Each structure stands twice: as structure tokens, then as C-alpha cells.
Image 1: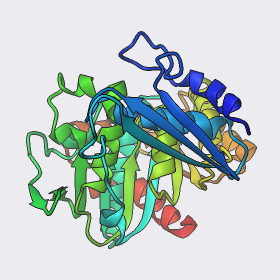
Image 2: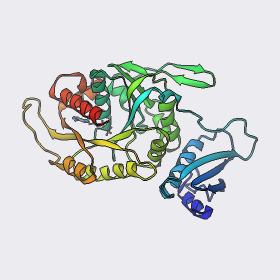
Image 3: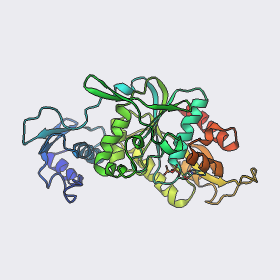
Image 4: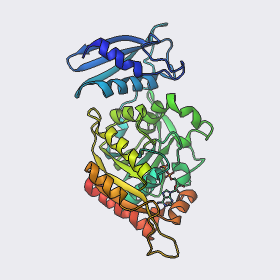
Length: 352
Ligand code: ADP
């Protein structure tokens, strides 16, 4: 590894507010140091508390992780060039709030609309029904759905100051602790989270929240597999991930991207399994019928191809959609769809 090599990788880090020019072209790379297997990049900012600092730090780290040889340690520092720094810019959050959490599990999907949030919310409720202490962090900045799916819209979590730090208290309902970006932003405001603020917001949703003692903390991750994901997965002590897909070929093709992200040599987190959502359609009046409207066996094939377990198959049933819309998750019921989520929860516990 040489500094000019690292410099070349950093051409991939684009500044979203400067016509997507790279940090290299913008002269923001103050220094690159390489010592043994550690790369330290220092980015220069013109002002304190640059709102893009966290985003650029995350993207810089992701660019180095993507390109560097296995086992490389990456540190990204910042320096303010115009005025003497009083405080480090960006978020300076530690991992204390996660110290009493047993397992942190990311719920991911290669693309949106496959029911990732539906699975995350119902799985959280099902784990609570099995007697576990559960929290769910809705990190889907592009469309936070936890408030609607739990009928907690409009509620505002309490926050208090503890020394230098502001601590947020999660809401509690159905035996689960919930936190969502949706509690802090109206739908129009949510737009600003796109891109630059996303990284920052995600970390706050996890690290500034008083989770307390939990057996499981589920993270409803944003759909896709971009830099934000790599940075998030790298910075949060995830135990592993669950990938949600529907059986169509187009959705399954995206599973591959998800698998590759978690198996990236520098991310390297276990995948606990694949959940095939909308595996078949069962009409309410014919509960014993299965119509494979998106094709049959796709999830099984995909799981076998990547050597992961097909952890659960959730049918497409009207009551699951209605539960999502009314804020009463299907997993609260003893109908077959509720039982499907309980079984998924049991399997997850076993595989963790
Ligand atoms: P994602 O988080 O992947 O974008 P959502 O969980 O928001 O997807 O689901 C998208 C829509 O599909 C929602 O209206 C939800 O209620 C519905 N849905 C998801 N899974 C099912 C299912 N198994 N049966 C019926 N409707 C479902």
C-alpha cells in the first residue's frame, strides 16, 4: 500500500454539495499516513461542525475499506483549516448505550418494497412474545415505517442531558422498545436525511438511545448496499444480519449484493439467514391454499447458492398488510401469519 494508491481510492469519495467532485480534487485530503497495516486519512474542513463531515468521513472510510488489502485498519481524522478547533467536528458518540445488548442484528434487503420493515417489526414483536427483551432501531432513513406500523406516529421520545451528552429514551409498545428517525422528522423533513445526513442520523438512532438491557436489538437497515451501509456495518458491533427478499428473480438478484456486502473481507459479518417474504399468496377465505404468484422455490435456491439458511417463509396475506397499516402487527395474533413470525423468531434465536 502506498499513499498515491490510497489517494487514487479517495477519488471515489464525492462531495455531494460540490457537484460530486472528489475530496481529492477539492483539496480536502490533508494527509495520508500508512504505518504497517494502518491507514490514517486526515480530511480538512473549512469550518467547524460541517454538516457533511460525518458523511464524508464515512464515505472516505468505506472507500479505503473497499480497496485496501484484508485486515487493514482505517482511521479517518479531521482538521479545521480556517479557525483553531475548539471541539472535534461531527458526532463523537461511543458505544456505551449498546453495552447491555446481547445481540445486534441488522435486517437488510437488496432493494426496497420487499417487506423488510414488515418483517423487522413483526420479528421484534414475535421475539417479545417469546419472552425476550427486544429493541428495534428503524434506520430506514429513506422511509421510516416503524411509527406507522406500530401506531406510534406523532409521539416524541423523551430526551435528557447527561453530562455533555443528550440521551434519547425509546418508546415502548407491544413489549418492544422502538426508535425511529420518523419520530423526529415530518415526512417532508425526512428528505434532508437523504445522503449527507444519513450516516449521522443512523448512528444517532443507535448510539444516543438508552436501550438498557436487551437480548436482541434489531436494526431495520436502509434498503440497498451503498457506502452508508458499509460505514454503518463497520462502526456498529453487529452480530450479523438477516436478509429479506421476495421470490422474484429481480429481487433475488439483489440478495447477492446484500450477501456480498456482509461478506466483504473488511466487513465480514455472519448472515443468519434469508427470509422469503410474500413466498405465496393465501386468500383469507381459502386459508389452506397457496398460490405461488411470484414463483416457487426461488428463496430456497438462492439460500443454497450462498450457503445461507432459508430461515423463514412468510406468505402474502391481507392481514399482514392490514396490520402494517393499522399499527397492530400481525405477529400479535394467533392466526397462521402470526405463527409464521413466531416460528421465524424461534429459528433466529436458534441460529444466533
Ligand atoms: P420495505 O421495508 O422492504 O420497503 P415494507 O415492509 O414497507 O417494505 O412493505 C411494503 C408493503 O408491503 C407494505 O404495505 C406492507 O404492509 C406490505 N407487505 C409486506 N409484507 C407483506 C406480506 N407478507 N403480506 C402482505 N403484505 C405485505
